[in-house]
Length: 186
Image 1: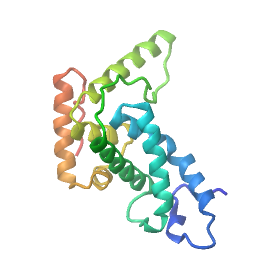
Image 2: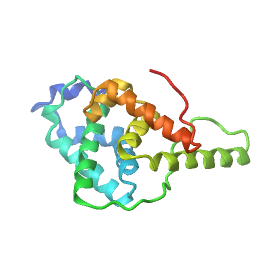
Image 3: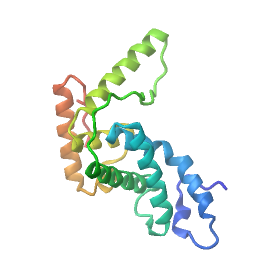
């Protein structure tokens, strides 16, 4: 069962829809994003696994609550964030070094250049992971998931102004650590 990429059909869930096939579609389309976001917030593989599983179970149980006011991705990332906050309340998190390198969008002209770029990306993300939680989550949603300010505000449940402020402060902290972050746009 293949649906359009916009998942517009979620609004029309009813008796005629195969909910298990729908869940499979959601997991295939957004599973990696949900897991990566959970991992980037918890920095623990096992907790990211647990959270991702819980997110899709919660989404499955609450498909009828999805409103097309936001994208499915935004909805799932908001559920993910709430699950991470629940886990943060339940457990003490140890700091872990990010092992999973984020996708590289460019093509390297040589193996040496590819290694140098991968090391630079890893160093930058290590610095991102050292940021306070409220700045880290904004940077990750903006830089890695390329969400708009409005979408980030929806995921976090804050105003766009708060998102812009947190992004500004996160970039300033990264620049102070020598981690870049100087790019500016709205």
